[in-house]
Image (cartoon, rainbow, N blue to C red; front, side, top):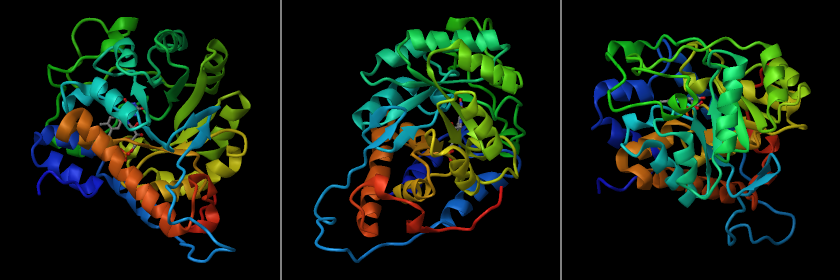
Length: 362
Ligand code: FMN
């Protein structure tokens, strides 16, 4: 049956076979020759799971619904899954962030909303009863970034991620070859509301950004009362410095392989970041997650929660809000199956004893 999706790969195939080629290239592709897009997958596949079939004493592990709850930043999340910030979601569906926010709410996961959203953050936040997290890019100056944070806070966001790995426009060969330009039906509602963008939308879809210094990061930390995460780290020493400045957490990520081709796979970098800061702050992870089994792998390596990017975009493209729910539902079903197969009742019981993985030094 064409409308039955057994895995995220089925959603990707369904969307990619009907969407325009320049748009599939933009969403699915990465920097350069997509080496790091592939490396993200290989590194996760290289983490193998060690199932437990024997128990000390009687257990109801196979009868109960596994407990997926985790505590992150003082909040209880119903599942260890969040939606990574992505834009422009309107490439995939007219309702864009509104459909994603509704689909996320129905599935009990939190969306992280990109500041490059088509709809204004205020409108997205009021589309759901759950509190979306905000993601900001470094636009113009620290003061402008603070204004963007304040705008999202005033709309109800208590948590924000500052993306540090995408200040420089990426060289994306598959995207360039496909002749991608920003379609006229895409706008930047939040950037306009804050005054960062005026006039026409840029044809290449790129709004210039500035490089961030550690001093800017410290200034921003002190300029807002929001809980702040740094997104896009693979260097443990940088995570350490940010946590020492008061950052509430980090997201280990290489932007889904979309910035520097050849960048270290996010799963390869994860253990060292966990070892550097994981006992003090939550470490989130993204880049390459395509199944609930990948979620198990990242959490076993020490992530507290995991974000998905393209998987929910493919769902959005296939069926809007319902497709977002389908994508999340598939991953959560696999996660529950994986926990039972591993012999675990709670996702928080996962640790490195449940995985074999190649060690890396930095
Ligand atoms: N990250 C941001 O911080 N802000 C963005 O606006 C943003 N836009 C993205 C747009 C697309 C189409 C994709 C695929 C990723 C984008 N990202 C952005 C990166 C994601 O937040 C996330 O790091 C990445 O998608 C995770 O990898 P995955 O797609 O393999 O799950």
